[in-house]
Length: 52
Image 1 (cartoon, rainbow, N blue to C red):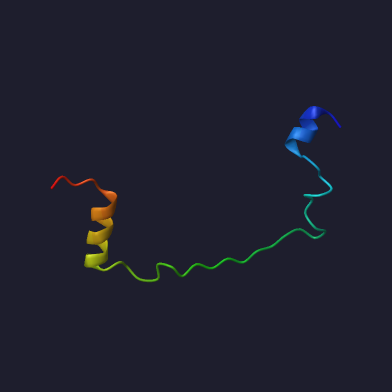
Image 2: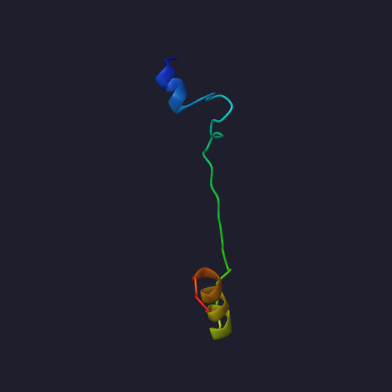
């Protein structure tokens, strides 16, 4: 194996995909509704630099 082949795929036997491939089903329900106005205000205060 050349150095380039090794750099592109190091230890192919250890990191090979299983036979038949890999499938994943991912769901995310973190933002199933919008933020409230007070929550947006807090996020704005924390993320933006305000001079008081």
